[in-house]
Amino acid sequence: MHTCPACGTHVAPALLSCPSCQRLVHAERLTQLAQDARRAEQAGDLSTAIATWRQALELLPPSSRQYEQVRSTIDT
Image (cartoon, rainbow, N blue to C red; front, side, top):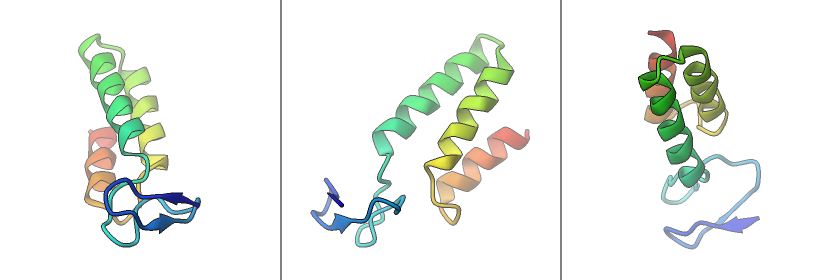
């Protein structure tokens, strides 16, 4: 278990968001992946961009708004 940096709630390892405040457990990693994917897109490397966005999906709760945004980005 680890502690949510936003609210101090103990978060089980299998969870992707804090059960109390809904903060994404992997927020920092997701920010990095988004930056990497955007850089790949700007460089015209769409296969790397899509692969990076797919890595991000694995760290997002499927019911989250962010998951839907990333899914939409991959699908376009």
